[in-house]
Length: 201
Image (cartoon, rainbow, N blue to C red; front, side, top):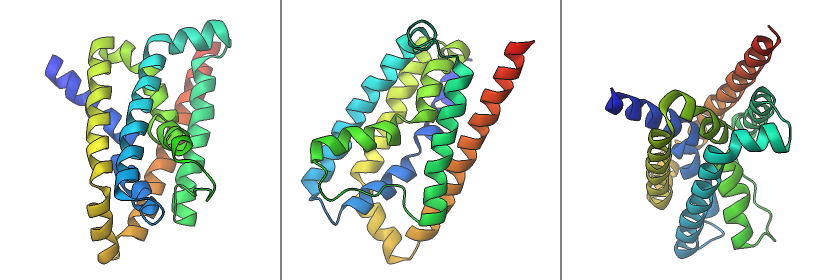
């Protein structure tokens, strides 16, 4: 039962982290940054995202309820809207991330790569809510495994991206992933609304 729960939690988090999207993002940056810089971006952003998710896992509900007086359903609806916007950007515009030419490398690893691209609305919500369903220990292990898989994909993004570009898969894949991300965002909005309605009864 524990193995099944761990696998279920890992798969759910992998779907939310969305390594394919990160491969597309890193590939889009390879014209501006060297291979060494891309490795730095991948590793630093993953570490930052891990710290953010662990923070929300332990203190997220406390922070929302007692510090900001924000209910979980409000967070879900807002984050769902952000995620949906991000997905629609990929679907309609053909890119997830447009980098300002003056942005510093250190800033890029934190915003927008670490947050909201890796530790985004969906994964933060999962970090807050999954411990109730799976338990805190399983959630922590699953987060670390999902981020490790995502990091591996980011480090291999150059090879994967070149293959996709060579066979003209890049643009269609961006649109498909954009549709999936937008759909996940919409589902989060519906889940938040459903939770709000239940809170009224």
